[in-house]
Length: 343
Ligand SMILES: Nc1ncnc2c1ncn2[C@@H]1O[C@H](COP(=O)(O)OP(=O)(O)OP(=O)(O)O)[C@@H](O)[C@H]1O
Ligand SMILES: [Mg+2]
Image 1 (cartoon, protein in one colour):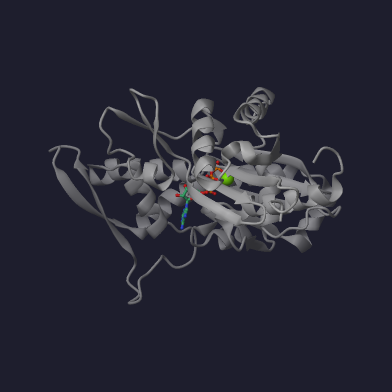
Image 2 (cartoon, rainbow, N blue to C red):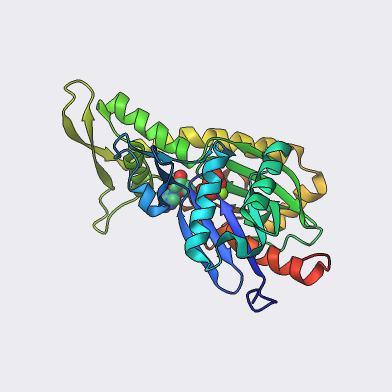
């Protein structure tokens, strides 16, 4: 639509700790890959971005550096964010990043004013005409299927890679939000530590993530195969004592224990959010329930886990990892319809 709209290209970006998702008006979600970049140390040239860069994690020689420019939901390397955006838009758009009229970037609510300024400046330097930052929890609520423009309280829990963000939204804005660094990356680290402690095996974070995706669960039956055998994962790593390569069989039961320990912190963040929520908005949740977005929404039993705590209806977004970028679609559209300034 926007490309026909006076040749203006409007773009929505979810720059997450784990995943970078890009929506181009009129084309849809055109990019969904890990927020990872590989750089040639000598020339500082980009070697790979996204999936290709992710394949290099933990496997490169000392000439190439693999960088995750967001850690724990915050920007840790703005130069690398510039490189990722520049490189990716060069591939996606014939005119590169300079052909973007409006760039709507979703960032965590916690980013500081200085970080916001740095991102806007980055957009200007790359040649984007207008760069706007939006709170990712707001976009994730929209993408999670909530009509945020009514005077009704809504609560969203976005369990991402770097942070779990809990936001209360009403009348189109974030009324309050809280976050904890207990999210996907933290779960992976805890699984890695567990393998070291209990199985005397050192594994990489990639393996820990694979274990989590296959085995993680919170309540209800443990994940099983078709023959109803509880799932296991054959984890390959290095024996802590002998230093030799070895395999350990990890079970879904031991991973449940780790996940429940991790979720204690998410549970307390949720309870402390509910405690300070204005009572009228809090009452709205009885009808509206709570919505879960982000990759962590895919953990087995997550809905039942929160329903048990809050005793109200809990919904999982239909496409949890896409919720933020899907929200940018509506945000760009709403602005186009209601904003008559220099749009
Ligand atoms: N099926 C699954 N089960 C459990 N976890 C999963 C599953 N699929 C993805 N994840 C995890 O979800 C996380 C990524 O989610 P998401 O893309 O929402 O994060 P992000 O937006 O990049 O991070 P943040 O919002 O914290 O900056 C990763 O930790 C990934 O391992
Ligand atoms: Mg996110």
